[in-house]
Length: 180
Image (tube, rainbow, N blue to C red):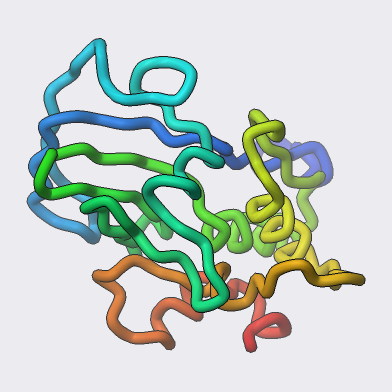
């Protein structure tokens, strides 16, 4: 983009309020993520096959709480350090869900701020009950006037394969000024 002389102000970074799902997944490596899957037409989804809305994810697969995000119903949250991306995987049923989380949205918003990009946007905002939007705003440096939920531990939830909290902080906090 730099070689094209495109102003950073004309670039916006997006995040999704839904997952993309795959079946019969065999994971060889969690980070970097490597594996295989079988394409299936009729796979679980909220409003279309193989797509789960973020409010469905937060109600059934990745529960938000004051202590952070907790994977449930046989799913585990993982973080690919190389891609700085989160995903859910259920080893029992072989279902994989690629998704943005409050942590990845926070990191994307920090990237936007750090590189003075034009902004951050979401696709399907009506699926979000506030966690993703709050993460984006906090990543951009906005301070909440009234807190209904404490976002710090939710934002700082990495996958179960990240054992060191310092590693999670480095992946999440791209600018040192916002690291707790």
